[in-house]
Length: 247
Image (cartoon, rainbow, N blue to C red; front, side, top):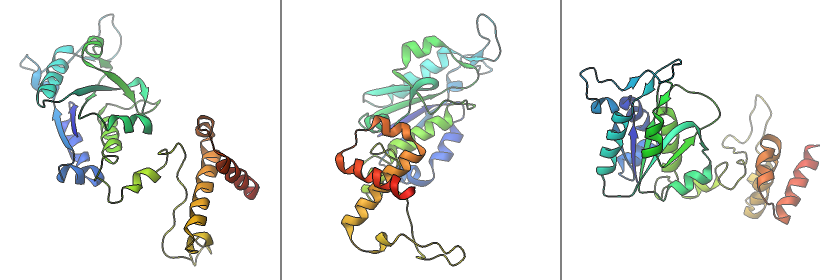
């Protein structure tokens, strides 16, 4: 899969993407990442990419032409079907389902805005969709684009060491993840031990316990997710058991 990021800070994107899961995927050529700086497409000697907004108001607005030309070059770099996404607080919320669907796109062009915003004509003419990483404000779209790249990359075949890792993560099945434990079995200072069921070797019991904990955690921390999920009879029973045991 190919990622292209339209950004005024290409070094920021390349540096952050070179670590962890994404960095290893790039090294193994499972994904590729290219950045395009709108300043390279500005026609004046000052490389101007922003101007004052019509109608007045605070801040500056990114100009149409440098963004438009950068996106066109990104599209022409590959003979593939590209989708252009503007990272915007006005976009549709980024969800695990949206990331999973995006895995099917061979080339994703992510536009990282800056300043007060970007010329609306660019959004209307060049962007296929707008995505938001949350109801808050950050200084630019670079961090949002990195979240999208990381979220999609880890879902691609061969990226993670264990193919089941992504399937078990929080939100992958509409629930939060169950608790995880590792060595040592007993913490001397606190007296806390690993739950006995995880030491039993009974895989059926372990799976039941993990599902119960995932349901319970979601009920405690994100009840809104449960409202969107249709639980089967076994899951209903496990959730009731969790609530009873908690009380």
